[in-house]
Length: 121
Image (cartoon, rainbow, N blue to C red; front, side, top):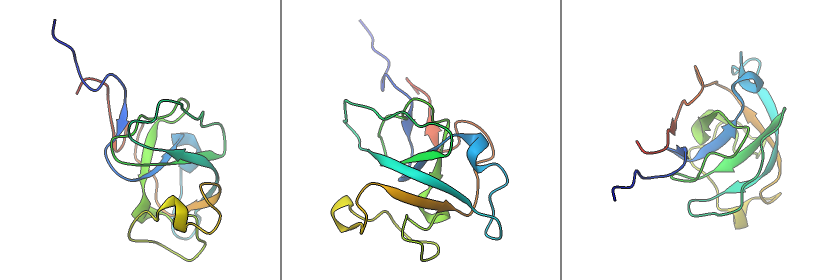
């Protein structure tokens, strides 16, 4: 029997899983500051729920958590460091605050499913 894979919506890049409404209008001048609630890794069974004003660090191939509609690429954020744009995702063990804290998004996805692949595509 054919099976469509992956069986879940997933991230097409490292970044932050967000609700589109939370980052609407974000820019370098007026960034969106969201609370980071944890990490979502590829192959992870348990899932976080992204609520209003929240985001989750997400790795390429990881399932899009419930509540999230899009992924903001890590390069469009401060990586949770408060030091301006970053060039890549820091390892969880190297993050000063671990997988929690805040993330400043300086750009926004244009629509739901930006940088997120639908299940079975």
